[in-house]
Length: 100
Length: 286
Image 1 (cartoon, chains in turn yellow, orange):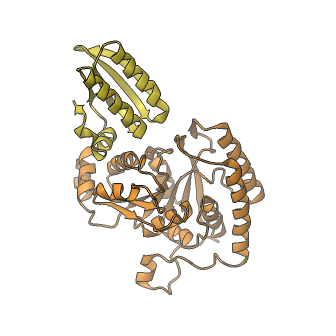
Image 2 (tube, chains in turn cyan, purple):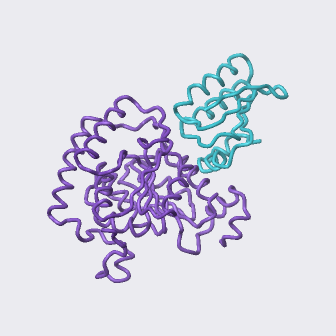
Image 3 (cartoon, chains in turn purple, brown):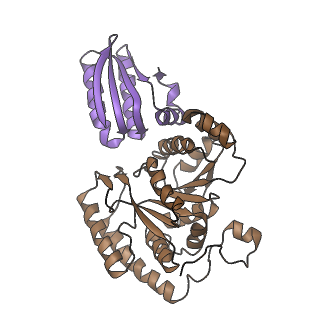
């Protein structure tokens, strides 16, 4: 999976491309938590190019979202692909995240 | 849902129709997923499979064939409330082979895929196998050993185990399939009924038995390279599994010598509903 990073309107956005599973979860977690530790609590994760998320991926996103909110910000999900959106809906996590 | 309506919708809309409205015609495709204590992994897998299958524009059904899970797998899947998903439960943990057999024989599709619950072979590989069915294959085997396969994160232990098994299966047992164990195999309706009505082995060697029977009955079996990503959490004890395979290879040979594969032992409800005396409808090439 590819991970790219840019900043838009004060929000650090991570663009993920490929399969987001347990093999990739630690790398994403490290990237997100590094930004939070650096004082950036408004994060975005662009899921337009993600074809699959497993439970490790969902846990990684949820954990980072909670840390952002504890720090006064939020982690939002951007443009999820159809499979990503359906997985979020079936796990009811679409109710927990702000999806733009 | 008519084909014309289906094709005019985008994939997310097609998924929403599939999720809420029972299909009103026999399914073109069935996807069977065997499960055992998959409460952590099964929902994302269902989401990925459902989204992709709904892009194909054909009526299809999803069957979760449980192997006596003692976690919340069955309740979790039932609670999704998906209109074209059926759960085939079991009271006991009889083995993956038993779960696949029950799921395959419960399925109604003209073409039936069984796929592992961990999405180690992504559902996007479905069309590779379906193309071979359209070209006349009876059985299509997803393969990590065929030229063109993309295998990621496979441990050295699993590679060594696969190579040893391949040597025994192809060299000693004369089954011309390089990868018998990939959990991504497709069957025509007729071949699924013929093979799974006769399958006797309930554990992980069932693939081997099904492919042995496919060769015995002269079914056209094609191996197709697939993408495969090792899913963490898969637990294979190579020594234990290897010994089990050797034992089951001998059992398969003995079953054949004893004539145990000459007639169905697990007739489908469809066969029973029409005429129990009728033989399977598969045309045998041999």
